[in-house]
Image (cartoon, rainbow, N blue to C red; front, side):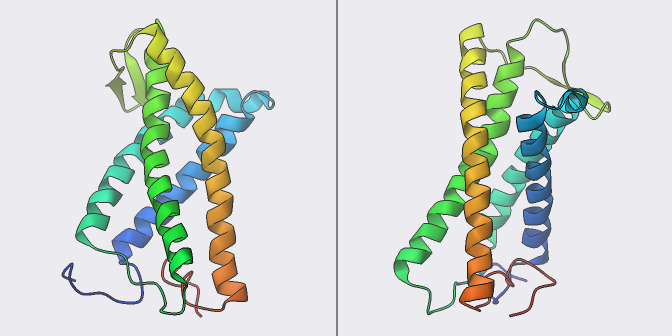
Length: 181
């Protein structure tokens, strides 16, 4: 479908990217926040890093897709302030989906380990050339951004459920293939 045509739903590619990135982010939030209190998750950190790089690549693809395939319009009865909040939330998501993997990559790049990040054992991704101070900043920022991502996910899910269950409009159905108004 050409970029200028709009429907009331996101494209199949946008839906696939949304749900794939969402699932990967939820896994990484769980592993990132729980790997210290749950020792069994410590072994998942290599996967956490590989998922982070995957999220970074998929997010770059999603941004390109979004630029070339605009989102369907929100229902006319959605107030302007709420539309603005929705746009701000999506912008914040894109920023976090880029910043989280980059700060994680910065963090691990300051280690003395040879090689690079392994992507699910298939190949290595070189470390970034950063100082110990930059690596330390990446570590601090990654932790704060993780909590911000969790809060944004909760806000996003609450907003989608509000539109579907309370306002009974098609906002959720635009991104969820199985949901009907």
